[in-house]
Amino acid sequence: MRASQRRTSAALLSAGLCLMIPSVTLAADTLAAVPEPGGYMSPLRIGLVLLCMLPWLAFCQWVEKDTQYVRRMGRDTWNGIILGGGIVGLVVWIMLPWNSVGLFAAGFGLWFLATVGTCAAYVVLRNGHVDANARVFTARHIKSWLGGLGKKTEAKATAFERVRMTRHNGEKVPVPTDPTQTDAFEATQNLLFDALWRRATEVEMLISANDVRLAYRIDGVGTPRTDLLTRDAAVHAINLIKTVAGLDVEERRRPQQGSLTSVITGTNARPTEIEVRTSGTTQYEKLSLRIVGEENRLRIGDLGMDDKQLAALEEIIRKPSGLVVISGPHGSGVTSTLYAALRNHDAFMQNLLTIERETLMELENITQHIYDSTKHEASYARQLQTVLRREPDVVMISDCPDRETAHLAAKAACDGKKIYMGIQARDSFDALKKLVSLAGDLDTVAKALVVLTSQRLVRKLCIACRQPYKPDPNLLKKANLPADKIDHFFRPPPGGLVDAKGNPILCTNCQGSGYFGRTGVFELLEIDDGLRDLIAKGQPVSAIRAMARKNGMLYLQEVGLQKVMNGVTSMTELLRVMRDEEAGPNSQGPPRAPTAPAPKPKNPKSDGSKKERG
Image 1 (tube, rainbow, N blue to C red):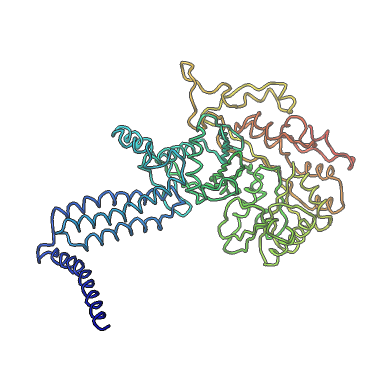
Image 2 (image 1 turned 120 degrees about the horizontal axis):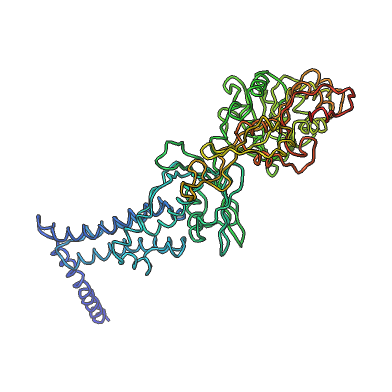
């Protein structure tokens, strides 16, 4: 038994020695491979390491730029992964002794796996987030690389910056050098440059499966653009705009909202803020751009009032209290006028508050409250009541939707506050009728009111290409204008501008539209003691109109005709903006000329229409 155990122990010892011999031999070989002092560095192998690092470093730089366009690939995350993988592989490679060819090759293999593995992972995931034409390291992309310097030079030449873009976070959008990104950059440049150059305030782009529809709003008039972008270019443009505005490129149905700023390069203009909105369905995707221009920062003196109207309104604004009603149809600039009135107050010395359904723009040092019916359980009037509890000096109310709002506004004006309120109406008398109907309390309305205004926005003729013409005598007669005293009106060139040889040319000032900018046409109904007494007694609007006429008031159409005679706008443009779906005493027929105030009619119940026509 003991002999058997001794034989077993001897066998196990022999086997252990056999297993240890290769390990000892490998360790001895490794120690033998360690170079002597001074013999570790090899210039040739150092050069090979540096040569291998060059494409990795170039790829790191490309990832830094590429993640700015493919926002789904986190910039910081992938920069860390690509750099980390290469650095870890390089450290392992350097730690192995280099005087052994086998160990140097093994280190290179580990570095290659760590570097190429992380780079390949980025390329695969990145290509899954972009269109087929923008994918890299594909057969088409490699073929374009091997196509020679000519194609690369051509691709870089197309990436020319005509509009300097800035992201929503303040970062400047660089000009891409990668050929796969130039298509999107160039399409976006074409769209923004064309919109800014043509002075568009709104851009609507609708992309369906097979087509793209593009339209601008220039000076308040819709203008289609049919030949600017192909469908593929439109897709590239909307993706890059969404990226720059901080939106999700992959989300094509849910509404999104962001912003960016841009300015045409080579100009001294201030950067323009552009609000970006996207939405869509399974059939199409829609892009909406709202370009916030200088016209949204106007003051009272810039709106287009004549000297008499401006002096009267500025005096009313200086009064510490009272209700000022600004009226007009949708799209007539009521909100811009309300903002301009607020800018005439000292925002540092007074407490200025607003309640609005939508913010046209941010007002400096003015507290703006936005009412959203989907987020607020209380009504519009209840939120107004909350605003009034904050002891404001001046309150702007964007609209008057109900009886309670009208009553609160009138009562606050009677209590010593200055109230500016917008009402959608076709003229100042219609606005008065709506206010009285909503508020119900005639005494309060009569005491609170100081002025009602009505307005329209007309396009101004381009002074570079407008042309004089002799107006039709029949039209002058219908408008009650003296034909013998009017030599000419102005209008845009009927057939466009032409050179000396009859070839069409484009006006560089108005881009061929014939109009440049807009101005307001205003009607002011100042409330004096006589009108206040008629309102308190519940007299009909016809009686109020007759007394206002006696006081020297000019109707909206008459003020517009003054601008036609002064060459500011055209008769065609004035007729366009004066069209009203609702029939009314001041909206029927052609515009009439300014006339002297009619005498007070003998019959108070008469509307004085015959007197007004003279």
